[in-house]
Amino acid sequence: MSGTSLDGVDGVLADFSESKCKVAHYQSASLAPELRAELLALNTPGTNELHRAALAGNALAGVYAEVVHALLAQGSLSASAVRAIGAHGQTVRHQPQAFDGTGYTLQLNSPALLAERTGITVVADFRSRDVAAGGQGAPLVPAFHQQVFAQPGQPSCVLNIGGMTNLSVLGADGTVLGFDCGPGNVLMDLWCQRHTGKTFDQDGAWAATGQVLQPLLHALYAEAFFALPPPKSTGRDLFHARWLEEKLACAPGALPQDVQATLTELTAQACAECVKSYGGGSQRLAVCGGGARNATLMRRLQVLLPAVEVTSTDALGLPAQQVEAAAFAWLARQALAGLPGNLPNATGARGARVLGAIYPA
Image 1 (cartoon, rainbow, N blue to C red):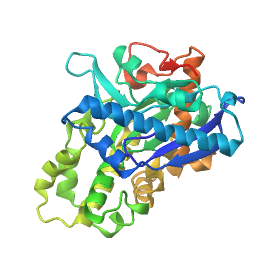
Image 2 (cartoon, one colour):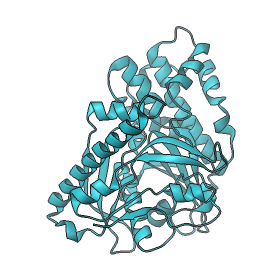
Image 3 (cartoon, helix red, strand yellow):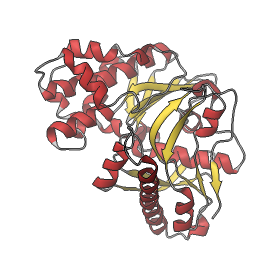
């Protein structure tokens, strides 16, 4: 998995021989600065896009292959011991239901090249079938969250904080609701890199030195997306540098650390409001993704949700950084078994669908 944050590639060796997913091994790899810059640039229109996107997909598949080989070495396994690789690809455009009523979602990848480089069957392109069925193609992880985190008779919520945030509400009766809450790390990372040169705000330490600017927070939260009811999804198509710069017009001369504190508060408040509105009385919020490592953000979530236990998924047996990669391993398994991977009430699709295209070894 390489998410919207562009913070690298996470890979897991997932074992499904028992009732729930067990991660046997974990590996990660950073993206070369030039590849990260190109993937970020491809989120907006530019010259020679088709050529650049194809080469970026090849380069990303190369990083995926490195992670796969590292996992095989870590487990002392041959390629034949692995049933399949679930390879999501890098989202660069997300426009479901737009333009012609169907829209599209685009993940750069080269699954055929990954199959060649690894000798393992690859399952990719998970989102497009859901979009074709009238859905948003996102979020896809709620079905996996239900499989591994649901507790019968007890409602709970799982919050993934990557570049964007998405919430899974696991009902006490087995029902599941899932949707995107808004930006996660994407704006915080953007601002941090611009003013400190670092790719992210370690532990939220920089944000902790600032003060929340209420007029700016109000302007940010006035974005129409936040008021939309589920199902809904979003991405860098909406929450990007230009969007932030337009909102900053209401805070001339703001200190950079105060803007960072405000962006952190935006993520916390948007997520907390979603839990309050749709959480179904949940008393536990398990957080995964890179945002679970942001201590300032986690503290704000707990303050905003005093009646809810806010914890990382580490406490539930699956480390926060491994959850999304494990989810796409599970989705690959669903595809090979001919079983649905989406939840229509999360994505808005007309019905359950088998997701993914299969590239045999």
